[in-house]
Image 1 (cartoon, one colour):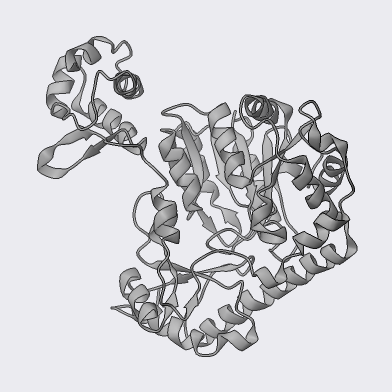
Image 2 (tube, rainbow, N blue to C red; image 1 turned 90 degrees about the horizontal axis):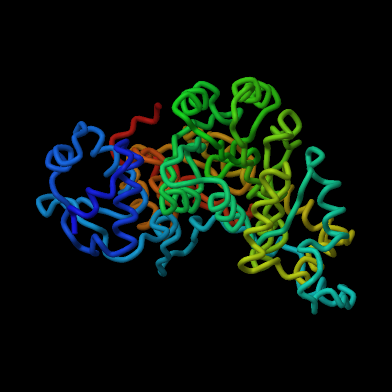
Length: 445
């Protein structure tokens, strides 16, 4: 009952009220579909300002626990919240002559996993529950490739598993974090489901914008999440000078930096990491999906033991470790000369493909940022009109909205360049440039 929930509120801050209602929903005192009283009545019952209740409602809505439906008012959400942004970004439809929406690597440029399986020697550790979570030889190779010396390194089941484990181990409902904007949609879904509040930090040609980060830190952000290389969707990368400026802004702050190397070797150029400047607080998550194959489902997490060790401990209560057999396959791919050559060739091919499309669009008056990785972030007059124009031409792109934290990115779409070799470009630059102008855009930003 509602009065029982009110009586359980000890902390009358927005976070405290949100936590009390969350507890009430969990134990069934508030049922799915039940309508909550108006904000002013709740404020009167708890003797707080209506703005405090509004803030609490916002936290609960971000966590997917309540929803507002016009005249029906605010109700306890029926069913669990899922990866809404992720589904919107990748919702698949047939009937396109070319699909440039996926964000996936070119399968023709990935190493042969079956050949690697044949090369992997028999290892008795794959039959044991008692071995270390990381194959020692793989740990040695990874530590040698890390941008800085790390206290602790482990292997998890992909980049999103790494983020999920980090959020569960280190963040709580209502915590604030700084997140690059635009951002990879599943990370925003994950934070929303955990009740963590993302605060947008712009990402320009040199990396996260320092002024935006400072504002987020002043507002209580405990973590900075960003992609330092080949940022998805913008294709931009962190510069050395911006890294120094970010390190200065973080100096003296009790903040953890989580770098997401989701591009996994696909960007060109020399990578820059805050780990070289702030090793005691920087965690790097390195995925091997785009460089070595999505079906590996492996990512490495390296950083200070105070951050990585709790992740390792949590996994002992669940999956325990990522398959050592698959780890051995990754070790082979990272050390086999032929596989290493293929990955390097793929990196060069992606750079050429992204550059070719960007140059062709620039010739047609559409300037795109970045150039690293396998995506381009295209400015458009009107997102809906651009996507419809492309669809009419049989081309599928990704909407910009799911990559945004709050206000819609109605002036952007994402195009994946991974499979666009020279013979595939054809009329695509003309089609994309026309789509960018569909609507009222004059061609100037």
